[in-house]
Image (tube, rainbow, N blue to C red; front, side, top):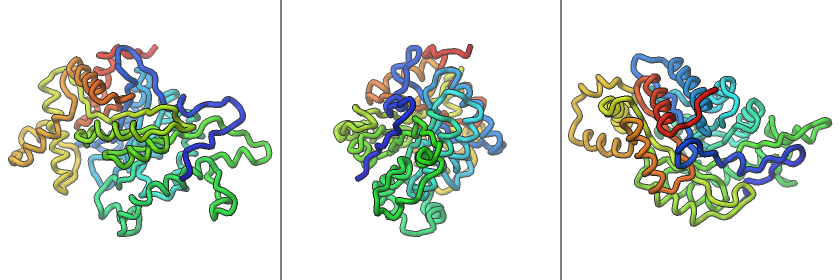
Length: 377
C-alpha cells in the first residue's frame, strides 16, 4: 500500500510533524483545538450559524487554540456543515494563523481526485494551515449516503477505504507510477505545477489524518504512521481501546516518528452550573430526535425542559450527558484534565453543542480563561 509520503523538496522544507503537533499554552495539559458542527438552533438560520463559526474561529485563533476543524454531515437540519471545504475557505478569509481542517471529510462519499483538488485549493488559499481529516462513515443515514454516492452498495465504499486513501494520497503527492491509468491526471492546485516551466513547489501539503470511532481506522492510522483523531464525543466507551490499538499498531513513517492522537470532546462551560445543565439537556434532546429518525433544529433549553421524555429517552439522555464535560469553567477544566490523564490524548478537540451561538462562544472564552490561554494583543 502506498504510504503518505512524497514531501515536497526545494525551498524551505517543512516536516509533517511540524504541521501536526500542537503547542501547549497556559496551564492546559495538551494543545486545545475546536471542532465545529455549525449547529443551527430553532429560530436561527444557517447564516446565523456560519456567522457564529467566523466568530468562533477568530476567537480560537486569538486565544491560542491550535486548530479549527469542521465536520461533514448531511440531511440534518440542525447541522449546517455539509460542505467542509466551502466553510474552510470562508474561515480562511477571516483568520491568519490557526490551522483549519476537516474533522472530517467522509472519503467514501467523494471521488479522491475531487478531495485532492478541494484541499489543494485550500492549501493555496492558506498555505501551511490546512489539515485533511478523513473518515470512512457516511456522516448521515443510509438513504442519504446512497444519494451522495449514487449507489446502494454502501459497504463497498467503507471496505474500499484503504484503497481510496492510497489513491487520494497519490493525487496529493502527484506520484502515480508509470503505467498507472491515472499517471497523467493531476490534482490542481498541486505538485504538478512545480514541474511546469517557471514552476515553484510549495513547501506544504495538507497532512492527512484518519478519524474514527472504532478500531478500524485506529489500526490503519497506526500501520501507516499517520495522526489519529478519535470521536470520544459520541463513542466514549471505545476511546481507550482505540487509542491503545493505535499506539500498538504504530509504525514510524515519513509523517510521524511517534504516535499522535487527538480526541474530540463535547465540552460546554457556562457562568452558572444550572445553565450548563439546561443547555446540555437541549443538545441531548436533539440527539434523541436524531437517533429516532426525527432530526431537526437544536431545540431551546425551554423546549427541552418542557419535553416529556419517555423512560427510554431519559436513560439515553443520562448516558449521553455523562460523556459531556459541562458546568462552570473550573468544573470543565477539571473534567478535561481528568479525561486527558485517563486517555493519554496528545490533543483535546472541543466541540460545544448548544442552541445559541452566544452560548458556544462564551464556552470557549471561559475555557480559555480557565487555562490562562493567551489573550489577543
